[in-house]
Image (cartoon, rainbow, N blue to C red; front, top):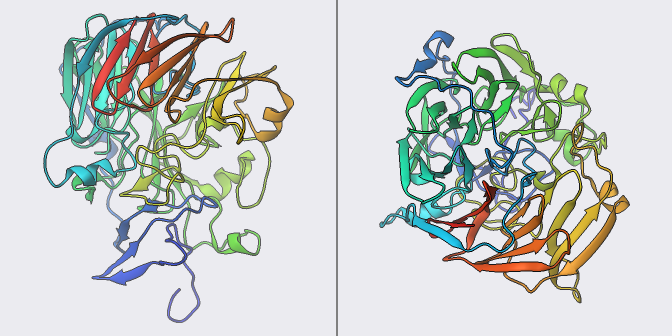
Length: 500
C-alpha cells in the first residue's frame, strides 16, 4: 500500500500467516506457504522493484544450428514420446507392454556431486532428482540431468550412451520426441531442437523476455524459465516462458514451427497487480483471481492448456493478453469464486506437474502441498477405457488400486472431477504394499505400479498380479515409461533400468 493509502498492489506472492513478508537490504523476502486458494509464486525468494527490462528483438531470438532437419519420421504407436506418455499427460499408451519382463540392461546416468551444495540442490522443487523421468522413441531412451544442465540419450536395446547435450541451465523434465527431432526447453529460457538420432543442434530459440539471470538454488537461471517437456500442437512447438503472469512483466507464450524454429505467433500473458479486483468479499477480495503460474502444458483433443486455461492457436506477434479477460471469458474453474464450469484439466495433476503446486522457487517446507521428491497420496492414470487411482483406501482396507470404468470422451475433455468419479462404475483390489505410489502407467494390456524399490505389474484382463520387479533404488516420481515392448524405470540413485 502506498503511504498515502490511495493504491494497493495486490501481491503475487505471500508467506505463511505466522511468518509474513519482511523487508531488508532493499528487497522483500518471502517464505513458503501452503495455501492453494490462488496461484502464488511459492518458495523462499526475494523480490526487488526494478524498471521493466527491454525485450530481445524478435529477429535476434532464433539461432540456427549446423544439423539438417531429418526427414519426417511418423510416430510409432509404442513410443513414449513426451513426459507422462502423451499430450494429455495421462501416463497411458495404446501399445502392448510386457507382462513378465526380465532385466535387459541397467546403466548409471549420473550421481549427486560431492560438496556443500548437494543438499541445497536436492531440496529444489522443480527438479525430480539427479535425473528426470524418461521418454523413449526412435530407438532411444532420453532423460534430463538437471544439475548438469544436460539431456542424454541411450540406445533402447543396449543402454549404451548415444549422445549428451549441455544447455545453459537446469532442464527440469525430459525432452519431447517428434518427427526425428528432440525438443526441450530449459531454465535458461531457451527452447532447443536437436536431431533425436545424434543430438546435433538444429535450432534454438530464446523464449525468455531477455537474457537476465537470477540465482536459484546456487545456480543461475533465467528470470523467465521454460518447463522442459514441450507441447507439440498442429506441427508447432508451444512454450510458455516465465514464472507467473503478474511478475517480471508476465509470461510469454510462443508458437514455433517445429522444423525451422520460426515464431508463428506470440503473446504476453499478463495481469496488472495494481488493477482493481472484482472478486468476492472475504479472503479472495484482496487477491487478483486471474493470476496464473507456469507449468508443463497439457492438451485435450482440441487445444493445449496451461493447467486449466485453454491457449489459442493464433496470436499476432507480441499480442498482449490481459488475464482478467483472457481467463474469465473461457469459463475455467476458479478456486476463489467457486465457478464449477468444467476446465479442460488433467485431474491427476490439477496442482501442477512439476512441483505438485505449480511453479516454485527454492525450497518448500510445507509437506505434501509442494514437494521436492515427496509425493501426494494418490497417483492417477487414464485412457479411454479405464481411470485408475492408487491411494490409501481407508483404515481397514490398506493400500491398493481403485479402478473406475465408464464412458468418458477424452477427445473433447479430460475433466475428471469428483462428481464424475463418483458416477462411474468402480472395482477395487488390494496389493501388498510396496511403498508410496511413485509412478502409475497403463498400457493396452497391463497396469504398472512403481513403489519404493519395486514395480508391480497387473494383467488388465484378469486384474491379477503377473510380475513384481526389484529396482536398485526408489523410483523418481512419474519415473516409469512403456515403449517398444519395454518397461523403463528411472531411479533416485541416477540409474535407468530397462525390462523386456
